[in-house]
Image (cartoon, rainbow, N blue to C red; front, side, top):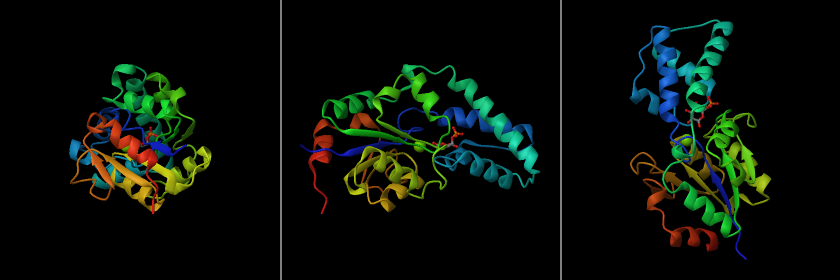
Length: 221
Ligand code: BG6
Ligand code: MG
């Protein structure tokens, strides 16, 4: 029997939480007199919370004490959680459930590999937590994507070799992390942005059952 490890990023792959990160960061940035646009928000995809605030402060030419920095981090997360708390299953991105269920029916190993420290509560809100055999999130890693740590831990928890794992990612840093881990990288989003991925799909609606079957059976050389 063929068995592979399928590792999913969360934000932008399973749920479209980028819009909530944007609203929370915008409110925070504006409160300290820094402009924040959707274009800048793109640059925060896959980036940790600490690094995101560092970038926003750099864009606004601001420096803060450690104490103020920590307070702003907490404030941002509070704002973000006010959106997350209202989430339900309607926010699962199209065909994510179809792909997850197909993998489960075919006895594949499934893990989450996310930079977010809010991954478990979000998966609970959209009732997908029980679909994952392993969860690796921002609480478990010391090195952020593009470092492969998050996906290597995921593979290990699934008991799979990295070369038998497939990663779904919407960020450039995440695709690079998967490639460095020697896993198959599948970009979800724009081909011109995610050109380093082995395959790119606009979203899961474009991913056929045949394609997934091939991933399951394919032996990498
Ligand atoms: C990533 C998001 O998945 O998680 C980033 O793409 C976010 O935008 C990062 O900053 C950390 O998330 P959180 O929930 O721990 O603030
Ligand atoms: Mg993402």
